[in-house]
Image (cartoon, rainbow, N blue to C red; front, side, top):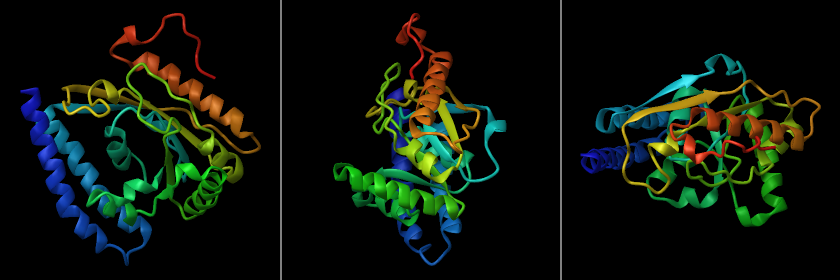
Length: 248
């Protein structure tokens, strides 16, 4: 049944992408925020469909920490799930992503219409300059910037290096940082086809004020909070060492 339910979900996700992608292209004349609101309907639809087909739901902690204005979101990256649900929970947003994703048929078309910060990871310093320039511009335009500091999805219990790009953007722009932790990888695994039933926990942390602070301090505080929350909300405590010290 898990396989059949997961197949049904993927079929619905694929068909809806094929339908939404051409419609997304038609939103080009609209302002970015209106364009995002339409395109994000696809994500909302698939979060709903995930519950119907796979009985996978979620609960949220810390909604009171979401600031009223634009922020830089530093989020744990374990699954494709968080890329969908953040569109439902937060205001209009753009993502830092590798530019190759824009080349994907259908899915990439929708991404392109949201004006993401699409960088060439091999570009080194130029990629950082692009993030700082375009990120500041998007924030000033009232958009939120979503960044996965570990870059790639990690397995439950795993931890990647927290790249400083998001923290550098915070230092240079003085916009606040909203850290986010979740345990979606235990139910929707990276590169995994099976979606396991259950309730994902997502936690918004206290906002990190970046004004007058260095990127290293910002990054360290976000990393420490996220990893401490990961150890708390995991449904598989054996993945975490009981005597491990918090990251940062």
